[in-house]
Image 1 (cartoon, rainbow, N blue to C red):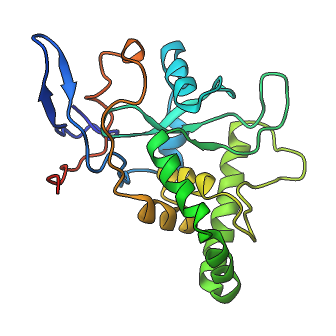
Image 2: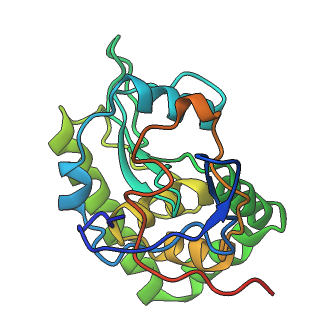
Length: 224
């Protein structure tokens, strides 16, 4: 097994029927990739048909915008997808990074349900350094998106950037993909560890590398 940077890592396994690989549950399925950057996000190849089907299964709808996987969980499945700034019909699609992991989406959703964005928006008003960092990450987000295609009308950012916070999922995805969003960093920190019972898509969608390739190097903590 290798990480996105090619470093060998191990994933816990459980015994199953003869000849069957059964990945063990992970107590911490989504981890920050220290190598995450805009360069690595730009270099990710467009997903093939099988991985588009995986993304669609995770999202519960057809994956759009010629997606590319830019972050993976410990089972090697997509956590974050990069999409093009316009759909195939030319419709503007300003959100570049999408959180696809069902477990992490649910945990971030709980933060939103607990009104975390109220406190975070207040912090933006009261903490100039945080506000400046957030605004700067928005500028880099737009610049990255513009490199993928023509600038969108009005140069919109995403998730409420640069002045407000409207969607923690957007910010978590941005941070996991690039390491460059202070609000996303907070969201990921408070949504993890993210226990997961195993691959979140049907077995027929798993490729030969899933469950073993592409995860971030780290050891699973022992279950409590």
